[in-house]
Image 1 (cartoon, rainbow, N blue to C red):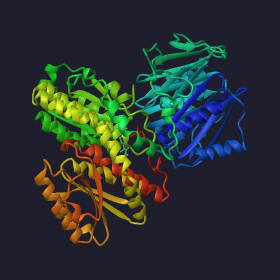
Image 2 (cartoon, rainbow, N blue to C red; image 1 turned 45 degrees about the horizontal axis):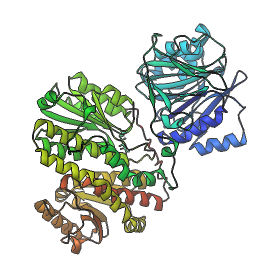
Image 3 (tube, rainbow, N blue to C red; image 1 turned 90 degrees about the vertical axis):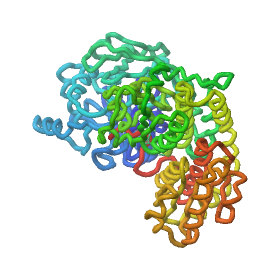
Image 4 (cartoon, rainbow, N blue to C red; image 1 turned 60 degrees about the horizontal axis):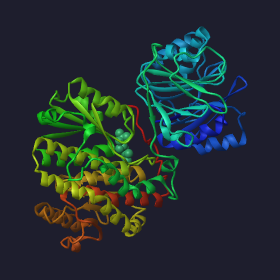
Length: 636
Ligand code: F6R
């Protein structure tokens, strides 16, 4: 939900900022803008639409050379995605430029107050009030960081703000509440960004900011008030950049420094046309990496990261999973594993609905919050609610140091590497792996599964990377099929047991990428209503459980396939190798390797990802940046 970059240093700010925006464009792409500070004057450019429009504008009307600047790529909340509403926003006199991610909930009142005091606001955004308030406070206190602290205390809602002031060259100030902001510390340069991918090309040393903190990056010798309590800085040819972090109250704040363990190439397309294709292809490795270090030589699970003592885990009387979208589908699959391996009841909630249903929680409920980004506001609010009720929260997250893991009692990181495409693929598979690990670990600690059973499942999990690789090698017919369906309006997805959430995930991928009507159903539910949707030629994807140890389910789904085929459906059947019973009823058969039933989603989802990606391409859609979406949803 909006990408933000701030820079101060020795390089051309515009280049650094636009390169950062390119990496953050997955967060929002309704409009983009930049501001640079040259010779005491703020110069800006902003354009509706994707970053490329802004780049074209900058090509035609270049901004002056500068070494301090900021930029923004927007996912609109307040006001249409046009040039005027694009960030940065300036005050009337053009003294302060601000970019913002989040929502300022009391902006209407603040705007009315500003207008009463004679300010003229020109956009429909909530952000613009901040630039005017900052300019007012700046006049009173004469320092951008202090002005930011004063303004932040008056703001309600969730926000990351980054600002520069015409009168303070060499200074960039940021602030965060419930929304992400990280600091990059380079040689004689400093970066502020929504995520580390924006500056990974220049430095892998970073600082994580806490809640309600203001950070100032000040280049050596920059004018204005002295920086005090500097927490870091780096010397280089251009002198040092001091990093000062305080709370909104002005008191020095504790920060955590960290080193980013992946490099710029991980955030590049690496020869693929789309990030999504690259990320689908990376799944075998992502799955293997997520298992790494969590299984000892004897097949025993050691999840030291869980940090919840075994005696407490033995007391757990309920597991509650909260997540959104694709992560929620991972949770729905996890429920089968948790209940089967641990015999502990498991509920799965859409995070956005969780606290409103007044869930029954308490110290014996273990809450698992699943989030790739670690910043999803709905999931964050759900976990806070759970902790307020006294429950322990374990986060399953792909983003080191994000808000959700920081606010949880423990975190199990998925090691998918950066996921840039808006549609989640490798993160989903690794979330599943992490859920299986937690469920097996609970089974191990509680003694509900024998050591041999756990070792057997772990062995199977360890082989899944190869199985996914085999699926990927056989995807050409799926791509061909997808292309042949590009003019259809509807595709339905059916599954039973863990195949049901897989069907939901297949439908979600198709909706978000191909903009087609797609729905997932439990195959047994069809006859209770949705079968009325079946008409001649409607493509229906069916995820078939293994006939080996799910014979009853398998027979039932074979009947379901016959029911829809009799009504004209064109069946696309995903079935494991050796399942011959489905052959007569499959208009298209997609083979997946045999796995234990609970692990089947790890292989069954992959053809659905490929299918959606190819259909989107065939329909001429933007694969990595589908319309109306953003990667990190930091508003409720
Ligand atoms: C769909 C997709 C979204 C996310 C959801 C949660 O492909 O990516 O549905 O899964 O927005 O995001 P995280 O996992 O970052 O909390």
